[in-house]
Length: 276
Figure 1 (cartoon, rainbow, N blue to C red):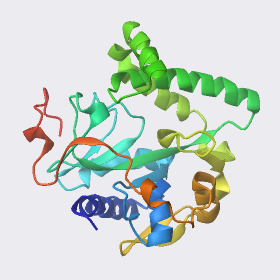
Figure 2: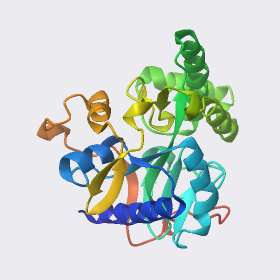
Figure 3: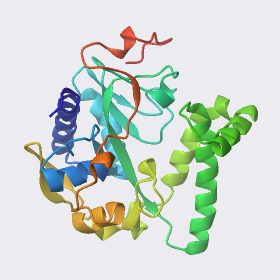
């Protein structure tokens, strides 16, 4: 493991320990699931960890984790860090720095992290899907006004227009609205489960049986859970996931301005409020 991977792995161990203590359901997802199945841990060139939890378990984790985590770990949500612009949580190491390009300007916690995504239901009716997607997309566009990552010219112009409309001033309200919208389809009555926080269209909603009670896997020697039908899950997301990527595509997809594993992010930015 690289030093960054080791730091993230230590966070994952704390997450898994709390889930086991509270008897909460979780799954390694996205590239972390692929890494567990194909490599027994990190994809060699990957640099993040993604986990997902059914909404009910996610809520319990968010409510109780703060009292169980070691002092250096901070559970970042739209409620614990008011400038945080995502609909999912991050578990961050306050002793480190990982300032990403698109959010470097935000007065929020910027430690090394793992992503924790809630799983929600997805409407099965086609007309309801269209209505839902329209409302969700509108909110996502408003939230995206806060980011400063580079876009192509048409999307840059659209983001500029939305900023002129004042959307950037109401990010926290839009995040709360999007969370409410996505969680309005309970898992118990939904045949389709969805990870809205990592939204990639049809790749992110699947029959609930793909997740079910999960399957056991090893991740760098740690016993973890992955989706029960992990072959179907990985095939849906990555196609022929058993094939190796060409060398030119073997790189991470997170871009940072500062990564320092030995100094806290507060050495690089001064927060207006000490919430960590």
